Length: 222
Image: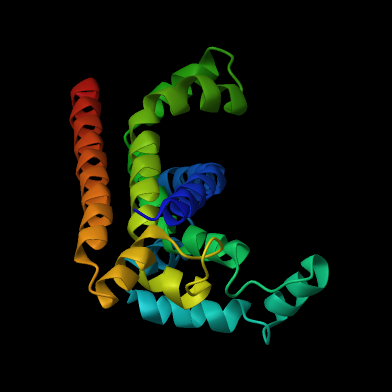
């Protein structure tokens, strides 16, 4: 087991979830309850990482945030280092490729909250902000929790985008999935098997948890 790679993967997954949580809640709620011109395009744009090959997405991320790009140069000026092949760049890539895993479950959860419930809260004197905290979030919590679990699990197992954007630098961008690939290349199948089994178990537990939340949410709305 490569503990440094596991620690880095957990760190990446934690910060990805922490940053995506408020962003995904905002986007998911907006898409759930608002109709506007170009909404279908926005939903398609959010879903692009689901269908785009990871290497293609990684390539465009390198073009967009590399040292020759405007964003990359500005970031390097402000921080003293670039985004490509750094943890910061890895985190940015993780946020982008996990966007649909965070937004879509939250959007479905907010869509399941009846408009009549929100209107009743307003009639009772609650402001839009109070309605959001006291009514909407408690009713949508299963979707929000599912989104966080899926995002965390997907971050731990992502390979293509991570390799393209972060490379394979020990203790900086070498995640558990990349460590597994390296071990297989060295024919160290025992170590690769241990790390793969860890990710497999976590994935099974995570997806089972999401399904349990889904069943519970459907019973509550029934």
